[in-house]
Length: 243
Ligand code: SAM
Image 1 (cartoon, rainbow, N blue to C red):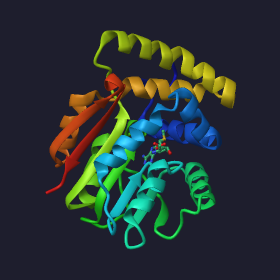
Image 2 (image 1 turned 135 degrees about the horizontal axis):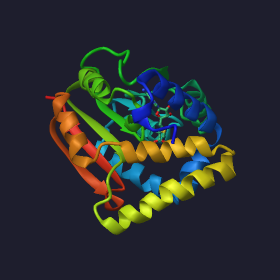
Image 3 (image 1 turned 120 degrees about the vertical axis):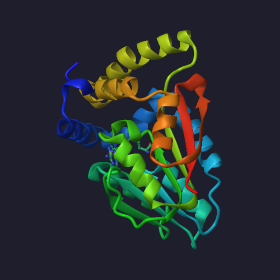
Image 4 (image 1 turned 30 degrees about the horizontal axis):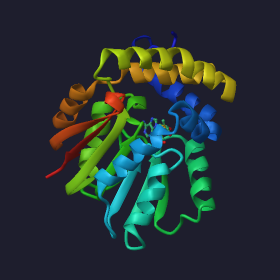
């Protein structure tokens, strides 16, 4: 398709990603529930448990979009802690901010428009950084990982929740069929925008597998890097530390 990464240069990819998320922002949450059969809630809960945020901590929810993780972190870090929801896309940020404010989640949350490749935060700043279903949309993933490593405190933890490579062939087949045929059709029905969901399916297929991403994290300076497969590796949670 014309969304293939190999055929577009970096600027065009960034423009495409911007178009996709401006287009899907309003219906992003419902599409997530429909397309993952609600399972994204389980993946995110596992991420929160692994993060083990405590009162007073500073958390960065990068590519935070509509704020599912931010909402949970906000309660865990309490009034002495803080959560920064950073996203490159102002439509997603606005939907996220409105949703969280409607839920009464205010006080310790701030919203920042930022590119993951060059984070506008000081060195050694955050106790926890999460990026959920965000890294695959980033053009220069190595630059983004280095930037995350820089703003992480010594002793801090980076968690990357992302689509990955299913372990079993059958799961891979079911999943390919689902993501290439079913997801764009559903996207078309619900949002009248098949192209955006075709991009999403493509971006999932192009994303580095478990061990490739693990090595990219090590190259960016993270330590004790490891991952957990979820749903047979359809999704993986990678974690790494800065010491
Ligand atoms: N984390 C949320 C979740 O799990 O529901 C949102 C995930 S959404 C699939 C991906 C998000 O990544 C979008 O909000 C998009 O704007 C953001 N994004 C894409 N490229 C980015 C970049 N270079 N820097 C920061 N955010 C980016």
